[in-house]
Image 1: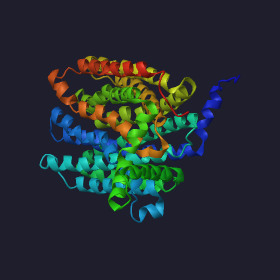
Image 2: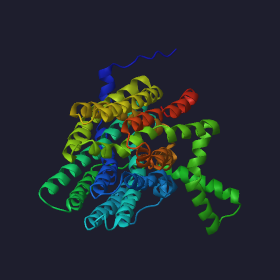
Image 3: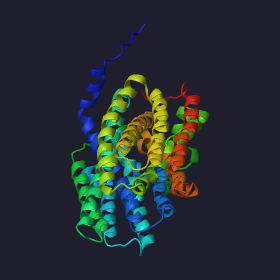
Image 4: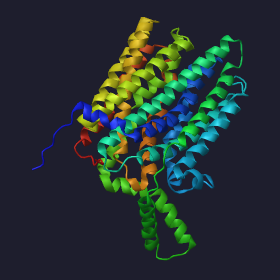
Length: 457
């Protein structure tokens, strides 16, 4: 009989000192940074140019591309970037290409006035979103491939570090954008946001330099497994020529990851997993899309938002993400999902208190701390959950598929967040109560499948 001895807290914490965790931290930062560009930075830029809440909310539809990046994830898994792939590797070649697109887009924004060319501003934002969503496919694959397939505890710790990195890129990116926008505005520059976007472009360059310090594994097994799938399809077609080889490659590239996912989990469990993933963070997305607008409307300045929501929020997120990773390691990722879901719903209610109380720096700090604590727990559990579901033969595609479905719920539905606030006649308190209720359906899905999941350990 095998006797299992539970690790001490200090032994569990040692997993964070693995050198691979620093690399995963940087990958997370590279992934999170573009979100602040097309999120709070774009929202405040449009808000301060006089656009309505509804317009800003609907502009957030550009995030919907994250819900569909699985459509081109198979290409990212198999197609090589000319010259770059040979020089820096398959995954890193794709990341550098997309970072370059984002950099050029920021430079383009620096020449545009949104009140005159709103369509062009949103179009460039869409380009940034597409490049960021494409980048995420290969960032997540490279992050997962840093850890062995059966290193369950390291995978959960890696998920925590990826989340810390993501929020570091997002929060500190927000601090940089808000600080410099406020600075340039006080200096009298009318185009203070446009100048700020050039500063953000410098951050992109720094991220690319850091990327060069991340080693890229070259797994032969992945290519062999993909080729075996192609050959199996080709045999079923009954002949071997350029047409059947092309059909086999396309079918294996697109359909293979989906067949693998349903085969591993079974049809009914797979559907339930997809339902849970779609619904889990909708409430947080509604809150997040309108949060910076809410802060602005009740009287907080960009500096206040940078200090409390971004700076203080980043510190809280880092601490509780690491603690959330330890909780997932010691208690199991499923229990962590339930706890984080309940925390998300509860902390959203603090914003109702802030809305009904009026401007209060103390309440603002409390709401931000607890909301970021809940978001940290939820995100690390969610990332670990998905990471432990994927087949290493199709790492990028399956992870992108699952995260895309989660993003679909968050972006497509949350685009109506501004319209919902307007429909409630600006009653932010009721709005935040509604966001708290939104987590319940996903927890029902998780409860129904919790004992039937097939996770990589």
